[in-house]
Length: 229
Ligand SMILES: [Fe+2]
Image (cartoon, rainbow, N blue to C red; front, side, top):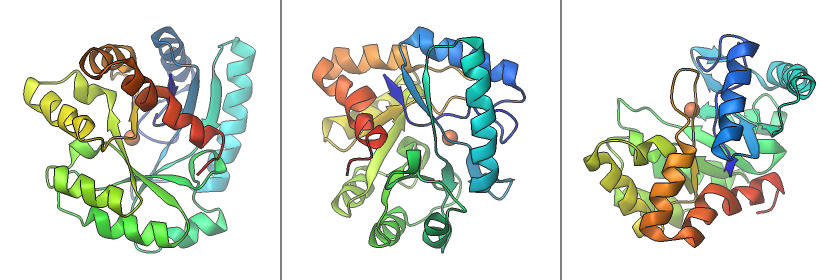
C-alpha cells in the first residue's frame, strides 16, 4: 500500500514529538503492508511550516530512517488548510505539493461550513489537482458535494479510520465508494492514533473486492509518485 497522508515527520506539527515516535510509526506502517509514504505536515495557523523548512527537516529525517534500516520509501508533501491565495504560495515554492507533482492535499474546517467545490475550482484553475483530505470529517459535505468536487476535477481522500469507526460513519464512507467518488484511502496517522490501513484494506476489499481496494490503497497513489496527471 501507499500512504499519501501522514503526520510522521518529527517536530513540525501535532504528529510526532521526536524521531523515536516517528520511527515507531514507520515500523508500524511497514508491518501494515505499506511500502511508500508521503509525509504531509500541516500548514495552517497553528503550524506555519514553510516549504524550505520542511524540505530541510525531511532530508535529515530521511537520512536517519535509512541509518535505522527501516525499509520504506519516503516522499514529501503538505496538508494545507485552504486560504485565498494559496496557489501563489504553491507556485513560488513556499508551500509544497505532494512529491513535487501537481497534486495538492487540502483540508477544510471540520467545525464551520466552507465552500469546498469553490476552492477546488480555484486550485484547479491555477494548474494544480486538489485532493480533498478526509471528506468524512466535514459535517456539511455529502454525496452531492462529493459529486461536485469530482465534476470540477478534484479528487477525494478518505481516512482509513472512517472504515473502522461506528456503523453510521462507516456507512457514509461506504456510500462514497459505492458511488465511485473516492480516489484514495490514507492513514492520516499521528503518534498515538491507530494507523488502520491494514484493517481498512480488509474491510474495503471484503465489501467491494480487491480490484477496488487496490485502486484506493495503492494504484491511484502511484500516479502521484510517478507525477502523472
Ligand atoms: Fe492530516
